[in-house]
Each structure stands twice: as C-alpha cells, then as structure tokens.
Image (cartoon, rainbow, N blue to C red; front, side, top):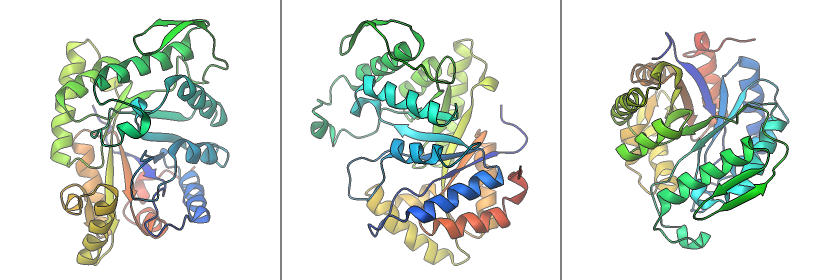
Length: 312
C-alpha cells in the first residue's frame, strides 16, 4: 500500500552521448539532492554497449564520500554477469562507506547478447541468478559461510566486515515476466519497475507482485515498491521528444521506446506522470532525465516537485 504522496528519488547522470564525462555536473546534482532532502539517488548498469556509461558501483562509492544522508541505489545490477564473491565484498564495502545507505537492485536482464563476452552460456541463467544471490546472503550473514551450490561452493569461508545494514543491504528486484515477479516475492526485500516499462505494464506487475506476496504470507504494505520514470522537462514537447528518441535509440537500441515509457513536457506534466506512477503502486518514484540533467533537476525542484522535497 502506497503512502499519501510519492517519495522521490533522482537518477544521477551516468550516460554521456557525446562521450564527455562531466564529473562536476554530477557532483552538483548530488549536492543538491542531499541539500533538498531527496530520498535516494540511483544508477543503473550497462557495462557493454554503444552508450558511454559509467560503472554503477564506482559512481556510488564516489557518491558515498560526498554525502551523509541521501540513500544510494542501483537498479539494477545483473548478478549473472558478475562473480558473487567479489560482488559481496564490493557491496559490503559500499555499505560501510555510505554508513548503511545502500539499496541493491538486482535483475536477470532481458538479453543474453553479451553473455559470451563474460564467458557465460545463456542456459541456466535463472539458476545462476538465484544461487549467486544465495552466495551474497551467506557471505553477509554467516560467520563461516557454507553453501553447497552447483556453481559456487562455500566451505566454511569468512568474509569481513559484514555490511552495516542487518541482516544485509536490501535487495530490490527488477522484474517483468510473471515468473520473475514470483521470484521477487519469494526472495526480494523490495521491487523496482524498470524505466523501460510503461505505467500500464508497471501497474499489472504490481498487481501480480501483491498477489504473490499474499500467497507467501508476506504483507504487501511492508514491501517497498519503486518505479524509474524517464522524463524530459521541456515546454517544447516536439523538441523533447526528438531528444528522447536519440537517447533511447542509443541506450536501448529502440528510438520509439521513449514515446511509450517516458514523459515529455512542462514540469506540471512531469508532476502528473509522477503522481500517476504513485497511483499505479510506486511508493518511490525515481525521476530520470537523460539529457540536460542539471537544468531539468533545478526546474523540477523549484516548481513541480517543491512540495515533495522536504528540505532538511
């Protein structure tokens, strides 16, 4: 069950179509998010692909040292493309550097295109995903971790320090298919809808999720739900649509996707979309401009979202 008003997160700039990484601009947005009381800042994972994109955990480690309050989220990591033992260590370290502010989004991913580059076969992805998460939890919670897995076997191994958050940083699942949503209900600590899903798709996913939680005796009201929402704040909607088309074409390989999943227009129209995402089931809405991020953040903060940003 959602609260009366949506909680706001903000996506940190992470992709740079022109190849020029503007670290100072990212730092200014991070400082403003901290100042304005934004709940969380978020990154996502695209290691391989045509879009210049910064590695997510490196960005969050950098952000941890520049902030004290805002929570740090990644949505979503693809554990099947990472070895779980060093990943457990990296995430535990990040939880310490952020003093317990980490939210770990995880997902299976919708494409196997790059699996060979990681030395992986596309088969058994679900088993590797589930077992990899079990490795994380074992190393985070057991003094001497043991896990008789198929892909990874832990035999009384210890990893220290354990994360600050107990029993471990929350694992929020990203999922589309019914079977993946069932896994989220069974194994997850929260759910986050992808930016590449429409609000109608997200609403159906939340309905499926709530039913799955209830079947397992889990209270949906205690299971946080979030949604990434791509926005283009621009009073000139055709111009905004063109820029969204360029970004979606490069990042997702589908220029038309933005017309179905993003909102383009005035700050007021973006506010309406955020409220629609909240009505569809999102407790937390992660607002994600994909160009001119600093200007868009400032316009939203000064206008449409001012009452949702409780300045400390």
